Length: 195
View 1 (tube, rainbow, N blue to C red):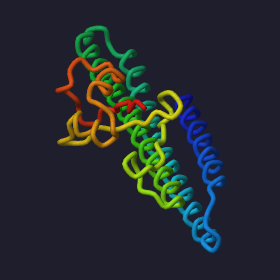
View 2: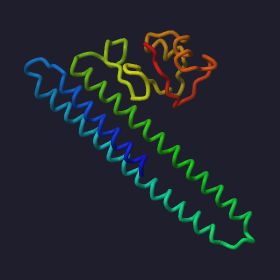
View 3: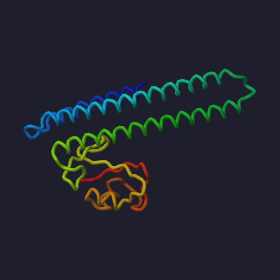
View 4: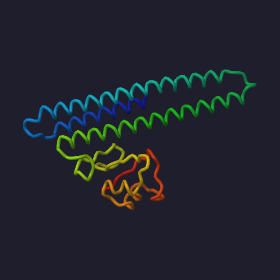
């Protein structure tokens, strides 16, 4: 429940920040209504994403509660089946761990999507393409220093390709992310993109 409150608070702060950022955007006269409608659509989409993730969290919390009840019920069983109880308890703990990992992955995914949408809306209003090559806005996912960009590694991406995309060196990526090797990155890994 505390995790959900933190997520809701973070998402609310994110939406307020997005509103402030978008509210400060300037548009060419005559395009104001279109820009405002685009921003409102973007904010509505983000709110829908937040509602979806809250629903998923509710489902996960119900599952965790069911597991806790199972654990308590298991403790009330007979002493002769201690090994069986320990096996069931281990299985339940593994399920809880899996659910917690899924919850964290959901949070990271939502943050990445929201960050990209904000950058796209801001860049669209400014008339530039997203990403450093087009001079667009870099958005932090809230996990690093202000202004740091983040990149989630996708299938078939290499560190050198990512470095080239953001206009940084491979060595800078290795250093910023404390990587042991420039040859090993995982799909889904979030990398800090240094300035």
